[in-house]
Amino acid sequence: MTTTPRFPAFLVRDTPEGAAGSVEWLGRDDLPAGEVLIEVGYSSLNYKDALASRGNKGVAPSLPHVPGIDCAGVVVESSSDTVSAGDEVLVTGYDLGGASWGGWSGLVRVPAEWVVPMPAGLDARAAMIYGTAGFTAAQCVTAVSDRVAPEAGDVVVTGATGGVGVLAVAILSKIGYRVTAVTGKSEQEAMLRELGASAVVGREAVVDESGRPMLKEKWSAAVDTVGGATLATLLRSTAHRGVVAACGLVGGAELPLTVYPFILRGVTLAGIDSAKCPREPRLEMWRRLAGDWRVELPAKMITEITLDGVAGRVEEILSGQVAGRTLVLPTRSSAA
Image 1 (cartoon, one colour):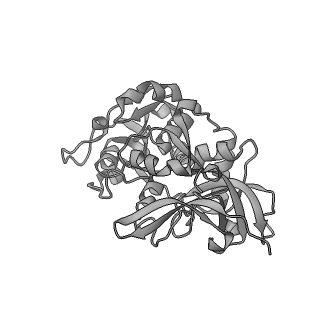
Image 2 (image 1 turned 180 degrees about the vertical axis):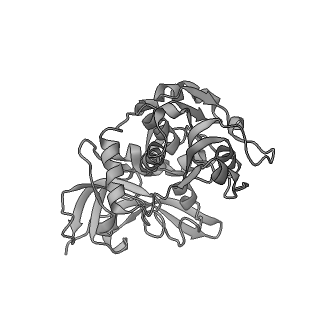
Image 3 (image 1 turned 60 degrees about the vertical axis):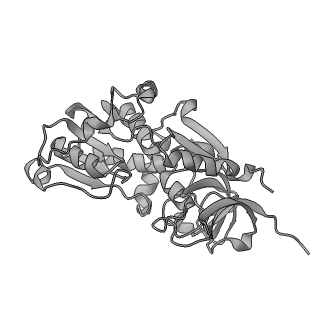
């Protein structure tokens, strides 16, 4: 009788004290259905993953659950004509790490339509330095560059030390935009300038709660990862025919706003939906990230952890202590 090799995963279970996650060893039969089995080289830790690890029903509707909204690795088995064993691939979005078990696992099984061939020039580690955050940032930059030229004026990026923020700052700067980075972490100013930010300001610079329906034109465009009052302020202070790409709600889901920015200045609010992005634009974003938009983050902006380090890192990201990108290496756990 043969024994199927087991693999580690960070599994979140319901306990009498609430949802709690730990490293467990699983077999292939524990995984959900799908045409493609992938050995995960790298995943990453995003804010959404942190919520899933706490059993947030809006992210992970059922327990037990394996978080990880992205992963990259090598195909082990495939019943699809479009993907073959040995292919290097990545997966971001769809239901990975949400309704379906995610990338904080030595193996994942997913539908073939979720799988993206590894773009030329990237490997699993480089792909997950981007991850869902980089893919989201690329969509935000596309929304800006499709509507506003670099010479139109400053582009502001909120949450600039977060995963999406650092990559949006770096990409926008690389392709010629003058970027103002917004952060509550003043100690990270030097890092943001190293990424290409021309100016660094505090959060208070983009929060106006005066109630005025319109504010002085200040930005040609914006990438907002915060939502709430911050997003409303940006829309009210964006220049004529400008655009605000919105991709987050850590600052709130409500939008206290009138229609005036839209009908008097022609401002565009571009919603960024990474999870359900159609396949062709998805592939195009990855081609750009591997090509003309390729950026290298400073080593100090990248932290690598095993599954054993996930719980502690989740605490840090939920308390706002994390800057940059956190990579998760699922197959290097010391748990047994």
